[in-house]
Length: 257
Ligand SMILES: Nc1ncnc2c1ncn2[C@@H]1O[C@H](COP(=O)(O)OP(=O)(O)OP(=O)(O)O)[C@@H](O)[C@H]1O
Ligand SMILES: [Mg+2]
Image (tube, rainbow, N blue to C red; front, side, top):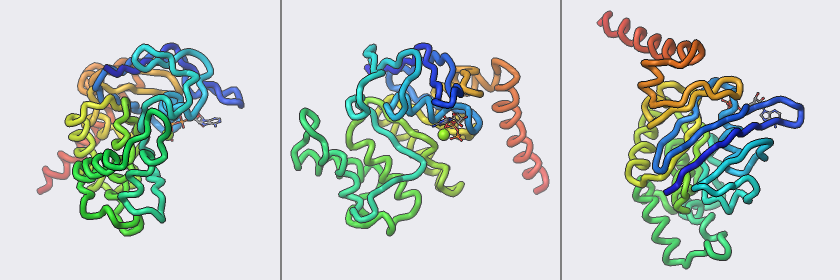
């Protein structure tokens, strides 16, 4: 059972600005939560505090009931995928996938056989088997992002964190990867927190969506529920109106055929 809980979490940067304000949010075991909101609303900061990449100013974050505020990032059992793939350019796909496992120390150290097995398993899941000996520069954007995802998955993280992982991809690939990410989640059941400013991405991926504005949580609900019963004017305009506009545009296009 892997639950994540934000309890009254505030992030104040050195300049005094509050990026996240008294956030209370619970992510259930196996849930796919999407953090949604406009640029600058505090999505990445929310994720980075959980990952240990940003200090928590006030409040607590718990994983499985254990306060993790002061645990180093590596001890939190999380996997993280960023917008920039940040692959090692001189290493092959296989080496990129295994790097984190090879560097592990102490209890986390695995033998070579197990590392090979996990790399193979991830490569199969992500359709990278034919590319294991290729270098990142020989891959497409989508394949590179799959390597980045695989690199997080081989560690079998308790919680998978993704910060706008698809925004460097073209529309077609984004659509395809979105489906793959959801399929992988359903297959593995890993508790997942996914950051995006894209309403459609949130609607199609999330079990529940947490909508932020200016560091404040506006609504936390299944996407359709938020769409049907927006909690306030912000959600109405950011989520509902945006989706209605898209649907209207699509309908207009089709009615001209
Ligand atoms: N190191 C920092 N020092 C001061 N302010 C910061 C720092 N990092 C982020 N901020 C501010 O905190 C707020 C939230 O930033 P954050 O990166 O979490 O937003 P975001 O929702 O991820 O936006 P985007 O969609 O553009 O990535 C912004 O107003 C940003 O300017
Ligand atoms: Mg961000």
